[in-house]
Length: 274
Ligand SMILES: [Zn+2]
Image 1: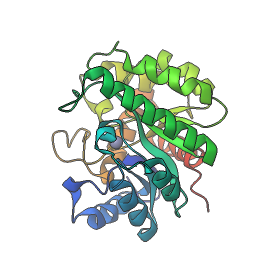
Image 2: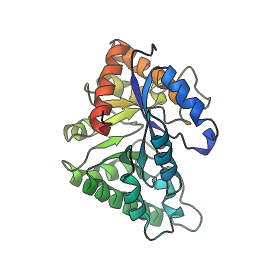
Image 3: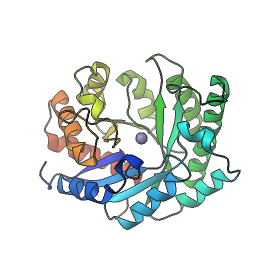
Image 4: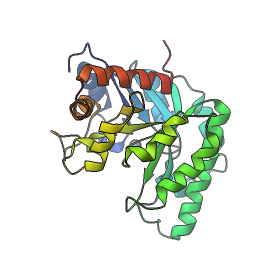
């Protein structure tokens, strides 16, 4: 993509251990590839401050801070929510995330599945409340073992009371557009990862084709989920355009339009400021 067509990588993990020592080079390569902004998403109480620090030091980078559902059993600090609240006040922190529910990974040792899910729900609920209180939007993770599992209905139920109080992005959206449409009507958005470029991703490709303009963003989720033609390799934010190109092809519109629409959506959602 020419650097004149800016596009935002709305979700990546620049502070991931898998990218250690390389984040600087990855941001430079992304900017060169026309990625105007990168939102690096925190996963726990150690990672979230690193995201805020990294964003403060890099013009193109913004941060989200939060406790990921897969990290909830690692948190022992009684003041964890106050720590997230303090981080949210740091410059260039634009959302609370990554928060949500994960019914895919098994419960850690010493936890029953039920207790694990209850703890995830408690953390999700507390961070939704915090975001609403702070006037910030949320980056939501949801993953299940099967497409019709309880995870998505539970997410929808927990987010419903916050309509009008905050907006959520349902990241790495894997459901049909009909599942997203009522939430989009309430102001929420979805985002597509590189999975949409996989020939086997029929549901997601249909969703990317059907989604209303302005209802979605694009993301790499780097270091995970590299799009074709880099599938199977470590993902990096410079690959954002491959996902956008694929969606443009599915919708039969120019890449420029997908770039412009997703930029507008990302700016409205995260409020990057001038
Ligand atoms: Zn993520």
